[in-house]
Structures are given as structure tokens and as C-alpha cells.
Length: 294
Length: 294
Image (tube, rainbow over all chains, first blue to last red; front, side, top):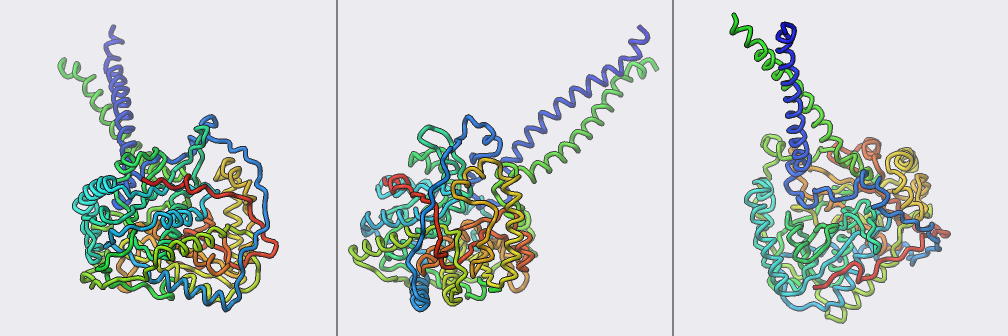
């Protein structure tokens, strides 16, 4: 009994240690998972929250062979490739002509409501679809919106979020950097432009049998495709402005009934320029400021 | 004394709780910071380690007003904009012609050593420089390498890292997905192609006075620019393959003496196709599989 009594402090101490240990590890786990999900968001407020969340395929998922596709495809047949070849003089002329055309491209926020032939838009999207992609996954969906009500709903969603971005999320620096471009959260062009092209990146692919397929480098691939799309628009005399509506992804995805693997990357209002369209008097960097030859 | 003795278990207990509390919080802090830095890397092995590290401007840095640029630029003058306008029939014809040209583009790994006029490459880079970018930051550097020794050094760096990627980093799935394209870590084209274009994204800008400038959406902007570059190459009959050499960034940046704010995003070997060039017999998705019209 004396022994037991003298051991009491020890028992109490051990009990307390166990209790504190359990309490601390459960609470630190909570903190950690919370930090992990918001860490990137805090560092780069201009990166869309929807694009940050980790619904992309990760290594752990890949280990679960039942859920993931074993493509099982044979090695592809290879075929000779001989594209058109031009003389040096022709090449130079073509390169100058294409540069002159592309150099006329500007981001235009004043778009005419005049209708644009849908066949032209179809061809522009077809052209965007010729872009290369990681392991030829073609991880893009182009949603072309011409419905008046739908365009207005998109405008409401975008303006509501953009106002929060400008007033709260982005900070004075962003607002200041854009002020000189006369950019703000009012986006009339979303009602006026005959077409809105919403470009979604597919963070993974879903095959007809429901299995999932890794989409390597999907954001880079879709952005490259967007570059080719911009070239195709410029080639037919249509204008746009490349916008990345911050944090509108989930609402727009839901409005347009897109699946969970698709994340909004860009929104392009497309049409002829308004007759009174103006653009900021910007200059582009000289070749020597963007190219190093060694 | 009796009171003191009966309180001993309580003192011991409190002391133990304090010790365990301090120990747990310091060790969990260590674990957390370790997890934070490696979390992204583990999830997506195909994302370049160099592109993951956080040398981009973050909110904390932005608060230090001494280090960061206050652009102080006036609101830009706005000018009327009226690009060329084509009739509906012309637009349709132009859109078809451009689609046909771009649809002939393929990623080509068999490049001819024949020389290519440098003026053409200059115009192609000029064209890439017409891409839009977040807040008009133009966050790109195109390093055009024609020096034989430098090309060979680049090949050595890329092949060494790519072999590790294929054998260790990427896992069987990646190797399997690429096998059918007959892609591996031997990159002869890096020696043979007359030009290698290395595309760096500038994660922040450095002004003549040494102050730094935020580069919003720099990766998306540079990828869009790469899309326009691919269109410009295709337009003059040159071929390339869009590669993203994994984890070669720091070595290549050092070899090419690029500053710390520049991260390698893509490497394009450029030239005429070899006379015996072959490409995998791939098909592209139909328009209906990439476009939704509402």
C-alpha cells in the first residue's frame, strides 16, 4: 500500500503524458491538412483556387491498378512524314507575313454584337485542337456559348467574383498594375460578344469504360492550344481578350454542366471589334529583349 | 507538509504535460515544414522540380515595398483599333486554309541537319513575342542555340536526367504511355537539329534599377506564346517536337548563363524534317469530342 501510494505520482504523470500526446497529435494533424490545402493559395492569390485543388491524378492513385487504365495499346504504326517545303526566300516571306498579321493582334475589350458565322468558330476550334499535348492526351474542352441567357448568367458569376478579386483577394499591386490597362470587374463584353469560348483543361481523362487516364502537363498543353486558337482568330479578323476568371471555375462548371475532371482555364469573348474599339497604346519588347542567340 | 506531499502527483503531472507539449509542438513543426516543401513534388512526378520551387513573388515579399517595384506608370493613352476585316466568305476560306496548314503539323523527332536561315528563326521568335501576357509583362526569354558544342552539352544534360526520369522518377505508367510513341531518353535530335529553342519563363521581372516586378500567370502566358511559335514554325515548313526536359532546368540555366528568375519551360529542336522522318500514325479527336456549343 505504501509502495502503491508512492507510485501514484508516477501513474498520474504517465496518464497525463498519454492524454496530452493523443490530444496534440490529433490537433496537429488537423492543422497540417488545413495548411497543406491553403499553402499555395496564400502565396499566389492570382492562381485560381479551383485550379489549385488537387483533383489531378497523383502517384498514390496510380498505384491502385483497378481504378486506373492500363492502356494496353500496341505500339503505334509509324508512317513517313513529308510536309510542304518552301525555298529560303519563300520561308522568309511567309515568316514576315505571318509576323505582320500576328503583330496586329491586340487584346480587345470592346466587341461588336454583330453575328459571326458559326462555321468560322468551328474551324477556329478545330485548329486549336491540332496543338500538341503530353503523351497525345488532347486534354481540352472548348465550350462555345452563344445563348443570350447563358452569357448573362456567366457575366453575373464572373463580375461577382471579379469584384471580390479586385477589392479583397488581389491586393493593391494587382489593381495598380491593371489600372493603366483600364481593366476592372465590369465585363460588358460578356453580354455583348456573339460568342464566349470557355476553355477547360481536363485534369484527367475518363474513358468510355469509366477508367481514368493520366493527363500529363495538361495546363501547359491547353495553354499552347489557346495560343494556336488566338492565332486562328487573328487570321480571320476576329478579336478577343484572354481572361482567366479567378475562382469562377466551380460555378461556371456547374452552370455549363461540365464534369469534375474539367477545370476552367480561360474565358475568351469573341467577335468583331466594335467600331469605336480602343486599345491601350502599349509597345512590345524588341527582339533583342526576348531572344538570346548562342 | 502533508498537503505538499499529497500535491506531489499534481506537480509532477503538470511538469510532464508541459514537457510533452513543448516537445510535440517543436517536432510537429519540423514535420509540417518538411511536408509542405515536398508535398507537390510527390504528387506529380512529371512536374519539373525546378518549376515547383517557390522563387516566384509571394504575398509576403510584396509587402516589402522597398524591394518591389511601384510602377508609378501613368494610365496608358488609349488609341482606336481597327484591324483588317474580311467578308464572311473570306473568313470561312481563311479559317479552312489555316486549319489545313496547322492540321499538317506533327511532333517530329527526326530532324535534318540542313542549315535554316537565321532570319526566319528571328521572325518566328518575333511572332511568339506577340502573345498576350498577364498585365502585359511579356515574361519570356527564347534562347536560340546553334553552337555545336553547346548543343552537345545540352544533349548530355538532357539525356542524363531523362534516363533517370524514365528509370526512376516517372514510374511504369509514364514509360508505358510513351512507349507507343517510341519515345525514350536518347535524343539524337539535340545534336542534329540546326537550332534548339529553349523557352524560359520569367517568374518575376527585374527592371533596369534592380527592382522586381510581379509576373502574373507567367507559365500560362509563356505556354500561349509557345503555341503561337509552333504555328509560326509550321507556317514556314519547319518542324519541332515540344519537349519539357524534366529537372534539367538548373543545369541548363547555368550552362546558358540565364538569371535566377528564369525557369526552363520547354525545349524545341527546330529544323527541316529528315528525308526519312516518320511519325506515329495518330489521329486527332473529332470536333464533337473537343467542342460543346450552347
